[in-house]
Amino acid sequence: MFIFKVFGAIAKLGAGIVGFFGNLADFADHLIHKKEYERRARRRKIFWTVTLSVLGGILVVLLFPYRLIVKRNGDFEIRTLLLRVYRRSEDYDIPEGGSDSFDIEAAPEDVDAIEA
Image 1 (cartoon, one colour):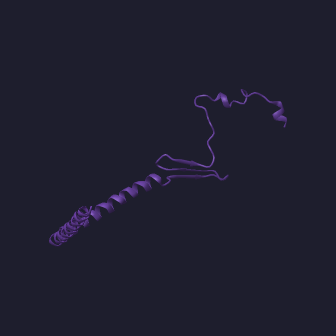
Image 2: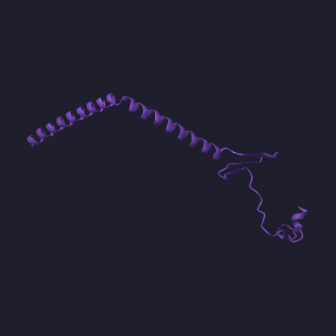
Image 3: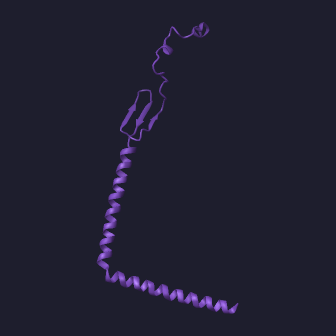
């Protein structure tokens, strides 16, 4: 058991030395190629700025309401390009192709309801 602890400590020390020299090599590489790294960082900033600006503009156009109707009784309707429609009151159900369901003469007469 003791021998495993010794080998483990030696391996940990070796990993630390390798990590130190790896960091030292990265630092030397950055010093040698400093201008190249700065150009790459500048290009990356420009790319992400343009990309995020375009995506933000698209979201604003899609989510910003292009039609807002407010009626006197407080009902409102908001439409966006994503075809989201927000209403305070629902539209009436108007059946397609038949006006006979709204015909007064076709409705059954309820005399008690009319008198009340």
